Image (cartoon, rainbow, N blue to C red; front, top):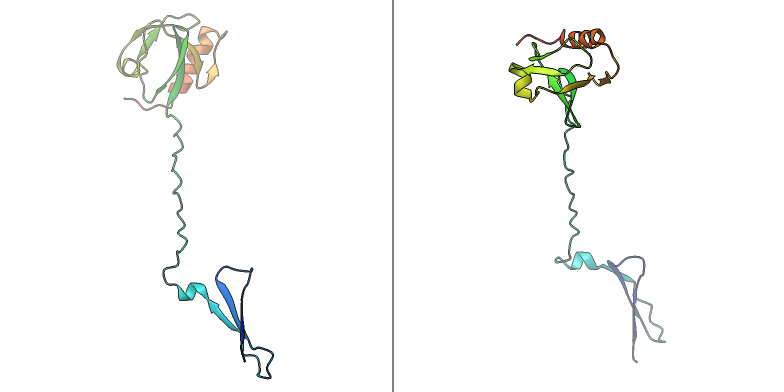
Length: 147
């Protein structure tokens, strides 16, 4: 008598194989179904390696400290932050305020004669009177430490 063999593979997973041996038409009982785990048999089976990219840490820019005065010179505007007083620039008693002389802190920060004050602490000052401009500068620099 010849025996018949069959092999079935499930479609549910790639790691499980069902092997079944079926007897021929004889009266012998059917042997039990054997389930083998392919991954357990194969020690060299590749393991999934998950690589996590470390997100780049971007530091938030710190807000500038001090009194911010925006100057206009040659069509370009530049905001300079003064951290101490005296500020170090002189100007005529007229509006708009145009720098006539620089020294100390203003000179180190890049203020130059001929620059026009166009904003103080982020507030545009176009059209303000000389007294208003002077009061804004004095109020803004009042809390600064003396160098």
